[in-house]
Length: 358
Image 1: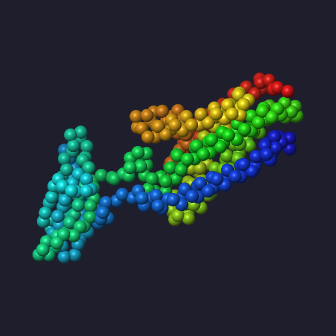
Image 2: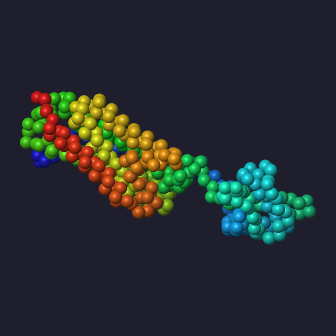
Image 3: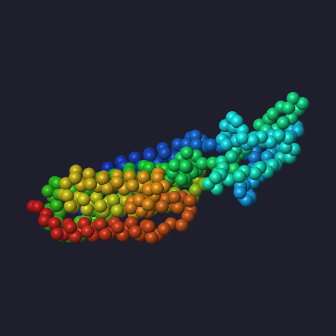
């Protein structure tokens, strides 16, 4: 069909590169997910014996009452409670001896700023005439967070958080740079190899030419997103975590990145049409991608700079909502699609007014 002739010719010339990149993505996702068990174990930071103690915190005037209860130890005559400001408990700030029951209420006043201090509680069972001690366990009055969770605000010890590392740190750069490259190359090579005038002398309009170029890269990118989601399902299943996240959530988290890449495709084709030089256009496309990634990264790391996040297209890809089964903002998805359409329309107007050398 004449309608897709340009598209089919482009696909015929580029299918090997497209196929090779799909293989790279499959290996990346598969290999990355296989590292999850080792990663989650490395960042487990549970206190010793925390499973033996339960803590309930109740506000009480100028402080909180920490209600502790623990498992019974055979032959224990009584229990000792050690209270410290850190898990090391080298020098306890308080000690309560001779507790006869398996529960105790400990009062902790608020800090000067009105917040609850971080406090750790260790329970020791005392038994026998020689007053032998047996460690029962340790717990704290706060929700402990790993260093990564403190930095990024998400628990990367579960599979959803772990996949977010892939989407946040690698996916946008990997796919974005490649999509920018093939988008620029699909148009620039027709200028540089002096065949643009030949293509446009055939029964094909400039609008159709650009639309087919855009549609091919956009369609390939969508196919790549679907493949990524399917590979992710298999990889998550292989590490025994598919019960903690649904298959639809995994595919959706990948597919939702498509509108982000539509903007990159549109911008890259605009650069190619305007500059007519693959190196310059590719440089401009890569700068756009890296700046967007940099703004997003800075906004994620620093609370004081979170206000810059709306200025990057990545922030409108809510993969976390998809992974955790939360509501997806169709407004954000539509906003990215509108940006891509606007950039494409500007490109089309520029291309229609452009003189094509013969």
